[in-house]
Image 1 (tube, one colour):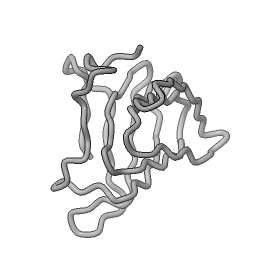
Image 2 (cartoon, one colour):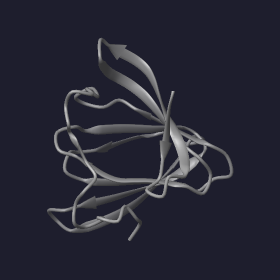
Image 3 (cartoon, helix red, strand yellow):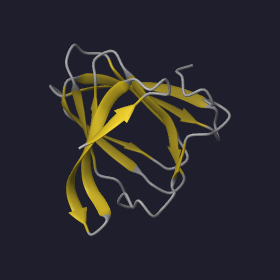
Length: 130
């Protein structure tokens, strides 16, 4: 388990790797503590495929090409897969009262040697919600 922190150094959840192939992570869970926010970040090549398996959350997505913002609700009581293509900024907020678990099937799998993730970009440069 990898503990995660917001931009101010406060713990906001964790990442739990579930299925690996060598150094690559095929499936993982992102946990988000109640009332906290994780993001924003962009993957240059990776598609995220999310399923909420515990709690409820909101996914904030910004498409830098169309300049459109989306806010999408997810809830473990109504599990659905949400696919977010590369080059879209993603933020996750736990809107429930308990930890949220978000299952991810990244494509391609997470590879620590591949610097695919970008956190330093103009739209959300302060890593805050709009």
